[in-house]
Length: 116
Length: 114
Image 1 (cartoon, rainbow over the protein chains, first blue to last red):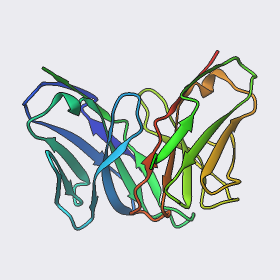
Image 2 (cartoon, rainbow over the protein chains, first blue to last red):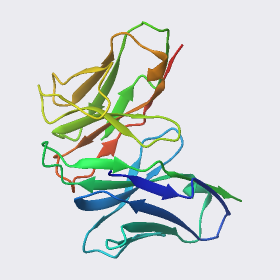
Image 3 (cartoon, chains in turn cyan, orange):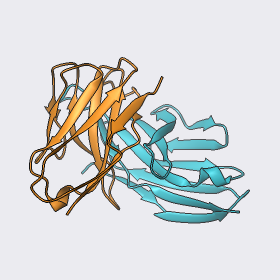
Image 4 (cartoon, chains in turn green, cyan):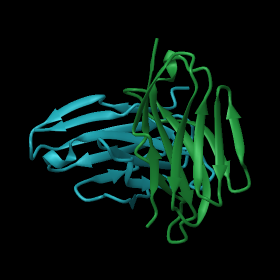
């Protein structure tokens, strides 16, 4: 069964600290993995996209890693800021041969709260 | 460039009432999508459209209808609302349906069905 599991479900850290969010998936055939940031009351916004051959990708203070062998990804946030408080959603894309578009599998998200 | 916009932002319905959610995008994207987001669950695809005049069912289409009469607009209709349809609804669009294409999301519509 194609699934995307994220951990932890929620996380509280102090401003300036680092944190790492985890994503494990069983989606096949794997195409790519995106991390989205969803601020409260807003729609998700893409942070990074990683394909099978990519191990690491950075976007400012956000660094995503991918291990396609173990089907795990992580999102590391460095020097957290109050504005990092949001839900972070892991989305895995699969090639859907039965339709005209790729199939997306969404994780439930990790709710990150940064305290001053 | 407003991106993806949704109206209304909030709505409360009584069971059995009908309503239409409007999504508009100004990026000239071919593909548009409707998702619902429930507490503790990932986004689930309701319906999608691969171009003007086309629609297709997603993962959870029952109880919803859609129309794409204009390329920039994608409407989601609830003919007879049920409490199980209480959710946050997100519209998204993408340039194509390819797996590498980023979907751009609207701000969401919070719907409560009493």
